[in-house]
Structure formats: structure tokens, C-alpha cells
View 1 (cartoon, rainbow, N blue to C red):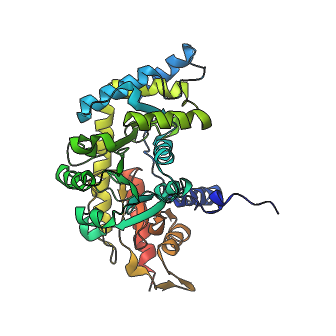
View 2 (cartoon, rainbow, N blue to C red; view 1 turned 180 degrees about the vertical axis):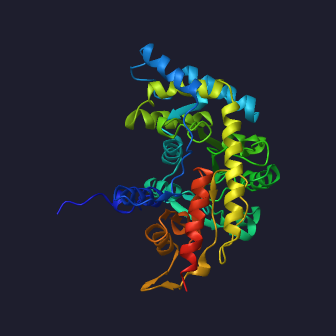
View 3 (cartoon, helix red, strand yellow; view 1 turned 120 degrees about the horizontal axis):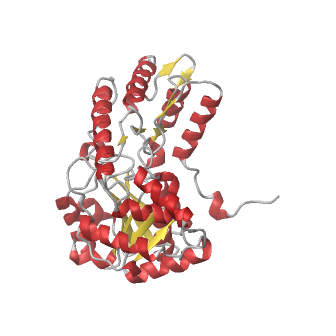
Length: 397
């Protein structure tokens, strides 16, 4: 019998994509499902970015792009990092990839050897631990609960470090919790990293502009560890460009060169048209970013208020991204008819099949007592979805 490789057999499927697919299957049967499972802005890509893409087509950007990205785009990213983040990079330190997801994976595959340990704060984005597995590294999960706003402390980080530690993955603003590390919190974490010269920080900042507490803070700003930080970002969230698939790293030159070498062998350069559109995104008018952030903030306030009225659900107030990550374990062990809720996965399936609202169980994010709701949908959808959730949960006894 033919079998897949151990590498693939050991991977878990993406729970977020699986729930979104189940939601679409029910919709295809004519069932009115509200999808709160997918991490995707519901806005359209701004017009000036689409115009840049149309112009690129007319100007025959139809050939292979350079593996690390067009120089024009890499320079636009360098200027963005200087202008918005106060960070100094050269174009040679930028590698453009097929989405920030590939950027994270490129970085891990370029620095991790079998047995190297990677510290992953939990709750974490579902793909981090799977990418570490692909790189044959060892996940060292450090858990932070709702009582500490889902953010790890310097003491927790220090305790997790061993001689085998090679990397720390940090995501702020966070998927799945919406938590945001302050400048002071990042400074303290950077202090721990500075004491251990073998640690490289992968700083996932894809939700940078969906931030409700002011100026985005990057851990790359601290000089003592600057040469050991890989900044990961892209256009998907800030500019509603998920389908365009453009992400990037800004990294120490040796890591950028390694990612360029790797990418040259398995995907080559990212799409030419999408890159030209991304130049317009980074270099053009930024009022679209502000408008979308304001809409997400309004939706956050709506969802938090509605969920606070549901008995048995414990919520924090996310400071960024577009997710709510409530604790729902008060419903574990309860039943409706012949159906008993054993865990968050059961509860998510119950809410989908009975309440017709798609969410994602927290186990996939390293937080089995929670569910993830995405509020990247309309106010009306959110109001109806939370009403359905409240009704479905009330039936559990």
C-alpha cells in the first residue's frame, strides 16, 4: 500500500480552513450559515491598489519575477518600515513571498535543524506548530490564559529557554486572541532574548494596522537584539488583499539570503501583478487602512458587548486584530437531547449544526477551553450570529 511521507502524516490539517469548508458545505445545502471561522477582512481591495494591478497587466508584467521580489517593491517595503516603524533595512534584507504564511515557513526552514527547540506562546496561530514540525524542530509551548490577557511574561519565557532553544515566535497583534504587547512588555521580553545569544525571534506583525491602542510596536526596535529578529508582514490584513498572496520578511542578511535560496528552489518569485499592486498598497494613500480599522473597532465593541451578556462565556477585550477568544469551558459536559459537549471542538460543531454559526475550537490554537470568533463581517451578521450562539447555548443543560 502506498503511504504518504512521515512528514505529511505527522501534520494536522488546518482547523480554521476545515471549519470554513464545513460552513460552505452547509451553505451549499441551502442552510443560512454565518461564518465566523475565517480570518479574512470582508472588505474589497481599495480601488487605487486594483488600478495598479490593472496597469501592471497592461504594462505586460507577465514574466517571472525575481525570487526575492521586484526591487521596486522591496524598496517600498524598506521605506514603509522606516516611515511607520523606525526600522532601518536595505532592500537586500527583504524577501517577498507568497503570503506571510510562506514567509514564516521560509524563516523556520532556514534556521531550524532537527531537534532545535522553538518557543511558541499559546494561544498560537494554528500553523506555527505545524511549520515547526515540518522543519523537524521541537515545539516548546508556553501557555498564557485569559487572566493575563493571553500574553506570556518574561519569567515564563526565561523558564522555557534551554541550550536547545533556537527561536521564539511572537505574534502581536495576535491571531487568535487579539492581544497586543505594549512597548514595555516587548522590551522586557527582548531583555530575556538578549541574555541568550542563540535565540532568533520571528515577529509576526501581519495585523500591525488592525490595532486599537495606538502606534504599533515591533520587538525589532530594540538594538540589543535587532540582528536576531525576523519581521514578518504583508498586505493581506491591512489592505484587504488576502487573495493576492504577498508577504515579506525583513531580516538579518544571512537569513534573507537563506530564505531567498530556499524560495528559489520551491516557489520562485511571488506573482508579478500582485507585487505591483502591493507597491501601490505600501506607497499610496493610507486612509483606507484607517477606515477599515475604525470599522473593526466598532465591530469589536459590538461583539464584546453582546458576548458579555451570554452566561458562562468569559471574554477579554482584544486590543487588535479581528478575533474574540472567549473561554467556554462552562459548557463542557452539558447536553442538548442526545448530544453531549465534551470539549471546544464539540461545541464548535454544535454551534455550526444547531446554531448555524461557524467558529473554531480552541484546541487547534493551544487553548482547549476557548473558541475563536472572527468579527470580520458586517454588524448585522455579527448581531444575528451572537443571538444564534446565545440561543443554542441556552439549550445546553
